[in-house]
Length: 314
Image 1: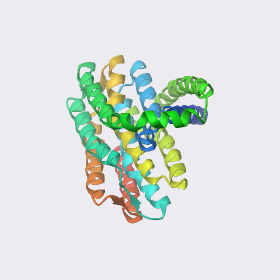
Image 2: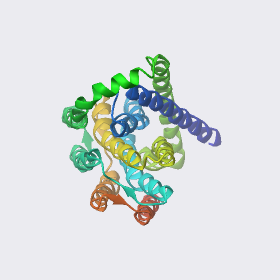
Image 3: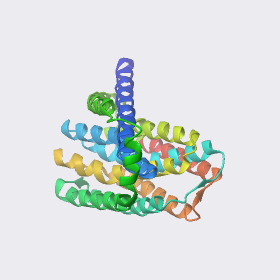
Image 4: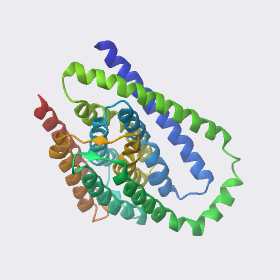
């Protein structure tokens, strides 16, 4: 069993490291294309750091462990909203000021995306027919984010392209990172299944706790780095963008590889906690700031959630 846990850890490390390289390359390409820094945080970095959830979701469906998808989606988003936001607020040492219009676009879509995934999962199964609507929702979200970029984007592109050449190296890193993400996800799901069998707990519970916490490590690393660079608002944009992507695109894409089964335990505990977390986050940011005390509350709520999950399955 120790060897399986070690291999699981190594596979998860490969998944996370590959996502990190992939995201950094995508971020540099986004800068080359002249995208707004906050849109990079929401749209490129947010999606890039969600690739572990997406690829592990696809692999789990292909391997007949579709219940892992729901556990990973709900667990990763709860971790994003509560643990990572709370950690970011605590590390920042002062109130995080939310002034950009993009943040409030994301807040609205956060609530909408959680509501959508709840409807998808309401009957215990998510199929590709429902997921077409998810793809359309994410398309609308993407267009909304990018529509205001066209006015100043061309001018920024000209300035940036005079300072840097075509990012061919970043394109190669992007491809290699994508390959690493797939291999890491494949082995991670394989060893997760073995751990679940050994512990005699459903794979969805392991995904809700261990896997979801592991796959959100890229968000944590990226956001702590952003805080140290004085980009606290971009960090929040990354958290929100990643949560929207997890809720909408992960089940939508994964369901094209087979139906996703959602266990009752996910609908009775994990989803209500996710919905409450999203609503709480929405309400607490209406004063356009997040304090360290609010961050501490978020972290404590996440710990309480983990305790309830463990208590439910002991």
